[in-house]
Amino acid sequence: MQDVTRRGFTGTVVYALNVLIGAALAVPSALYLLKPKNAQGAVDWTKVGPITDLPLNAPREVAYEQVRRDGWKIVRERATAWVVKNSDSEATALHPRCTHLGCAYHWEDSKSSFACPCHASSFKPDGTVIAGPAPRALDRYETKVEGGVLYVSRIIAGKEV
Image (cartoon, rainbow, N blue to C red; front, side):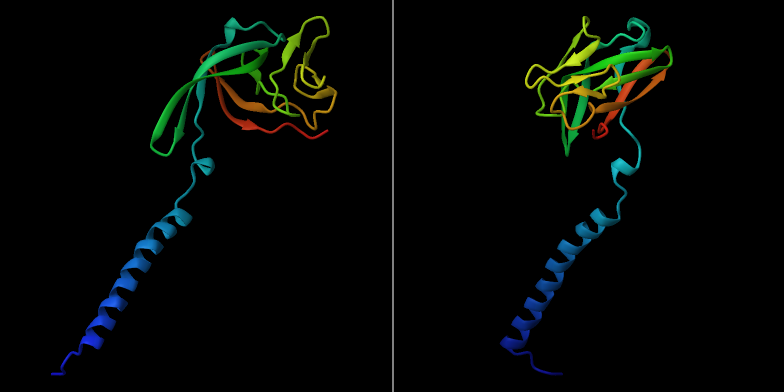
């Protein structure tokens, strides 16, 4: 049997600690890279309300409660969207911020268009740009109607002008 020197023992301990630290860093990294992401899997849908409450082809600002998950923190917050009911089974939901600088826009009945008060951008009811410095159409939410109830999900960016 061979005598173990202090230098040999210390070298073995340092080598073993390096292996443990490397494994502690490699395992979570590998799991992160190999685990399927939520964006590729199921979509979170948020209930907006009954579609029958909305007028046909007339934009209406709708408030609803959404649940936002950030790691372990779950936040319930009020959100809004401009909704245009196309039929009893289909609707378009627009994000309530202008694509130019993020100002809140509003609907003008007299002009039949959305108007941004910050820099005079204007948009059609479907969100496409009519005029102004806005670089693209209004962002919209993915929507679905089930059992007469409208649901919204992730934001789909508007098309560039």
